[in-house]
Image: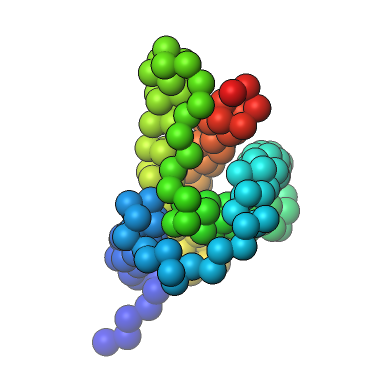
Length: 185
């Protein structure tokens, strides 16, 4: 019996999602020993600002990818979404690098803004980012394991619309969190 990735997209999605989320929660939870992570002070300090730029670029590439597929430009859609994935991975690696060394950034603003603006925005951003991980793996694996002509017959278009929407909202809310932490306060 031949096992093909195309026949195991859900299982591969689950495995990749669990591994990815375990890495994220390990870094955020301080499980990663900081002695294993090289500290480059200028890089650590630059990560939030670089990630804000990466987020802006990702919003642009995701939007371009959505517009491209709606206009039937499949090759442009594919390039844009792969670029979005690379930007997401870049964001995540940089974020995990910084949070492994520094921990989460404390909110410097007033308590009412913290309680009624910052925390809800951060919570929704994090929740959407977590939800996006399996959705992104799923649509990516469908795209990589199926012929382009067969993709409309898979859940790729439907799940992709949901994933792109949530991804855009998550990146946008991440920029709001960045602004609250580094610009407004």
